[in-house]
Image (cartoon, rainbow, N blue to C red; front, side, top):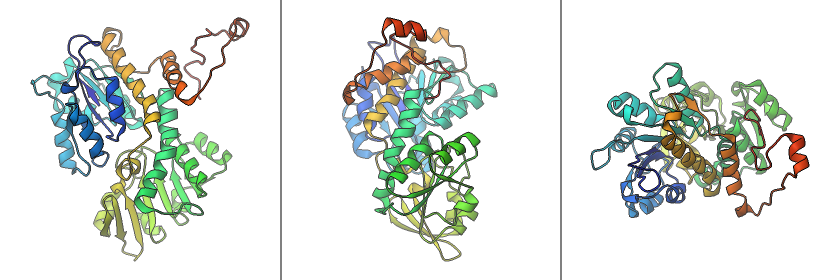
Length: 397
């Protein structure tokens, strides 16, 4: 997403945004609205928009650019429409989901970058993009890495995918998962949630990894870990979760079993070589976002959401509760950069641990959770303030 703030934060804060347009923004926007008529919003990929949810925002006066099933060209058009408001003024903050908006403003609208106070980024891929821009000396404004807030990455990425992956696969195919061999590429937080969800349905899960620590974790949690080249002949359902391009390529698809289901819940559209599939196989569209391709060897591949994020393309994304933790961090990060802009020279930052804990605490009542309190003796022994923060920044949850 992105933001346009006029005058002061508290009383006059029009927003426009770019993000996965599941129904979740309907719940998100009330937390940032002060003047709904000045809000503009753009999707982060061509299949993520849930039109009924966006219609609810339009009723509030929000400018929405996007619809489910855009072409790539239409997506770029939508992205550009959100840079300037109807009064001719440009955005002055960016709230991004994947890095496209950040790159677009830097590359296509360099004349307005001096008026942008900051960027907040939602995704792993978007954070990699920020770090690359910083390393190359191309980042022109301070940015906050929201993705690595614990209440984002360990909740959205892990628990969100744990529920929405299977939702997308089932809505698209109605396939029974029990007994199937499922290959999950990657065992980061997204991969962990995905593998655990499939295992919970009775699937036999194989994991592929490049990181020895993640590979060891997967093995010690009971998963077979091997290469895609070995897993490809065993799998019946394939899920990419890595954020890295070219994970499933043409040679892999040619080796798959007949009617293997292939989908992605990692980066938006680069993990599966869909271009190769479209150029080398005969396509039969079963229904929107479900395509069956006949390969040259006579076998078939069932591709979901054209290789985009299956939970958004074939379902409605993560549940709103888990996304609330992500979006609370986004709002806090936007406020931090707007109100303390002079304290943030150009760079990539993270929110303080204390704010992370406050986001978590704000969600406990809904679940009926009661926290234990440290007494004076305990807090002195541990060297902690009884009100937190409770862990050092380097702690891995």
